Length: 308
Ligand code: MBD
Ligand code: FE
Image 1 (tube, rainbow, N blue to C red):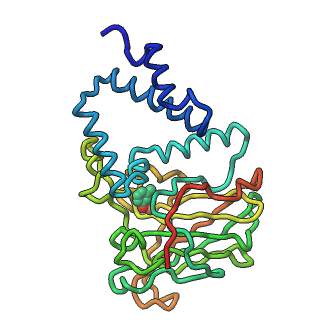
Image 2 (image 1 turned 180 degrees about the vertical axis):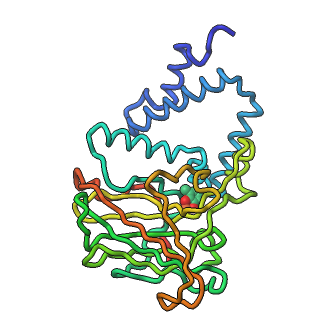
Image 3 (image 1 turned 60 degrees about the vertical axis):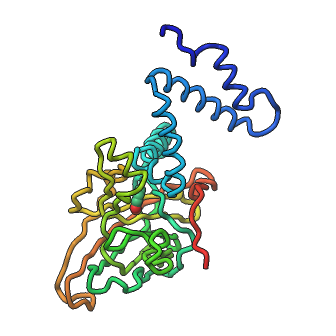
């Protein structure tokens, strides 16, 4: 076919109508986005000759994806969440907003409202004692001049030895491996936790189903997530990805970046009052000055909140 039906004036007008362009109600912003989605979807169907069977299979896939709560997982796995970081990095570079610890994706597994502690805290509930390796995770939060930031909030979360997260894994106790630490006078945070394992997508889930068809695995390296914030400073969403992990540079969610690799050191020296083997991970974070007060807050992404 030489004429592209999706590109005809009649079809374009039709999708403008479908997107609400003909009325004065609703959201002009959403109308503009939906019009573009419809037009681009029509073009894709026509250009790639998407069959009806393929189309309806995709509709069913979206139902199953949402039904399993995996939409956030799929966008991470397809690299769209990482693309948002690349886009923000480029915007920052354009206005000279650079320096400090690199950002990387939040991922879909944050839960708001974790217990607050001053300076130091134990993060694990002891349920994996004898299985997990103890990990002492600590460091400083610094300002753009390298000066320690006292009173900064370090909101961190990570997986257990099976690579699963409390709340999403209902077998774990409430807020296990999730804490908020307020940095001390020297800008320090200290967490006594356990060495996490990397996350793997549910092999039975719709995200892995898609990845299988792309010939890809659904594994992440072991990592620890962070939200770091302090008055007058720009909110930072980032992660430490652990050295030595097989998936460190083969992350299905593309979160590992230069500057975000944490060197885990294993010791067995009787120090810290630990009889056996334990791990140390030291990592400092440097924040940028906030260009405006909005920049001090994390995004308004909808997130889980643990109900008591
Ligand atoms: C994770 O733990 C994670 O960090 C991301 C980005 C996606 C899935 C699971
Ligand atoms: Fe994670």
